[in-house]
Structure formats: structure tokens, C-alpha cells
Image (cartoon, rainbow, N blue to C red; front, side):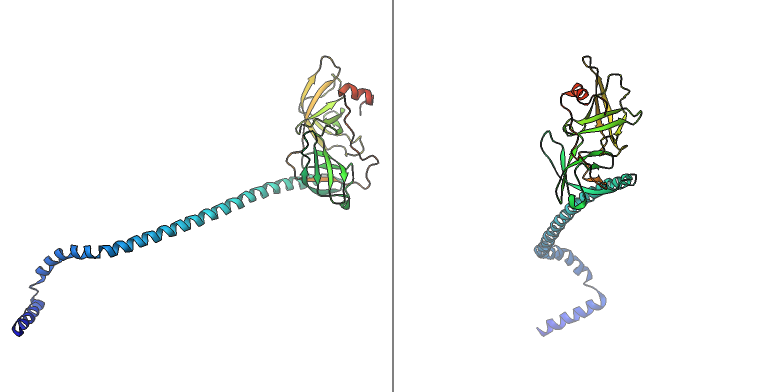
Length: 285
């Protein structure tokens, strides 16, 4: 036994010095390596699977977080777009107010009358802020209507397209006077008491005449869109589209005056069409 041990030591010493066993060990390594690889494979597979699951879970959490963040950013973007549009409307409103000589009060729309044949809105300014009945309201583009009821904190305004509203106007091109009344259509006014030979054309700008004592003269009201001659009547039917954005404006201007008009109720639109209007008035407004 001792002899074998001494022999082994001697062989190891000789191999260490002369590298006789290198080729043998190299050959054995080719044989042993696949065995060692197979032995370590379950452990490595477990580590890979654990890492893959961990990475997948991490990616899923990150994906969910990114989706939530994108949803929040999209909602903020929508709000920014709304604010940008509102800012544009306010800028246009302020630019228009700079061109008006009268004192103005800015008010916001708080509700709309949903009755099918009524065109009325409620504003967030009332008698506490100096609002009175008959007071004209405008937006950045033209006349919207006038105040018909007032409470301390709110006021109700009738739009010019309300069928009970009538507004004295004139053709800006030649001064031809008439009355524009509402039709309950938010995009249409009707002119009555115009003879068939009246000098009026499509595209004519209609402005306030100021003859009612409520609306200051010269404010844009509407553009003429249709002129229809009737064979059985000496008058023509004229339709016009309001310049004001009646269905879109949320901020309006109230034209202030030093004292409210003596008669602060809106001028009613005469029933019965153009002939009835002529008989009732007897002359141009």
C-alpha cells in the first residue's frame, strides 16, 4: 500500500514536471463535460425560468403603469385642448370689447332653456352686479339677445332667435331698415315688412339700427342668406343667419348703461306675418 502511494506520488511529480497526462485529461474532459452539463441543467433551467417569470411580471407591471400614465396624460391633453379653445374664445371676446365704447360686464352661461320653441339662457350675473331687464348681450361676433328677467345673482336672457323676440335692424350697405324676428331655429332670423322692390341682397350685413332705444346702433346681427319673392304678396321673405355663435358661446358681454330703459321688455314679434306687421306698425320701424 505504501509502495502504491509512493508510486502514485512519483507519477504525479513526473506528470507535474513533464505533463505526460495532459492529453489524457483533455480526452477525459470531452467525456465528462456533457455529464457535468446534464447534472447542472435542472438548476440552470430553474434559474432561467425564475428570471423569465420575474422579467415578465416586471414588464406586465411596467406596461400597466405606462397605460395608466398614458390615460392620465390623454385626459390632461383633452383638458388642455379645451382650455386652449376657451382661451381663444376669451381672447376674441376681449378683442371685440376693446372696440366697444359702452361699459361692459363679462358673464358666463350657466344653463339653457331646453323648451323646443324657446331660446333662452341663464347667466351668472344679476341685479347685484348692475344687470337690468332689457340689457343687450353680445359675444365676440355679434348680438345675442337681451335680458328679460333678473334676480340678485342671475339673469335670464332671450336670444334673438327666440320666436318672441324682434330686433330693429338696418342693412349696413344702404341703411335700409327692417325688423329681424326669431324663428326658434338657432341659425335663422326672418325679416318682415320688406316690399318686393327693397334693395337687399344675399350676403348683406344686418346691424342694429338703435331705433328701439335698447341696442346701441351698429352692432352686427346677421348676414342675409335667402330672399324669396311671393307672387301673392307685395312683400319678400328674407332669411338671415346670426353672426353671433348662439350655440357655442359660454362667455358673453352685457352692455351696461347708466340707467335702465323705461320699457325693458323685448319688443314682441307681431303675429300673422308681414301683412299683419305692416297693418300694426303702418310704417317702417
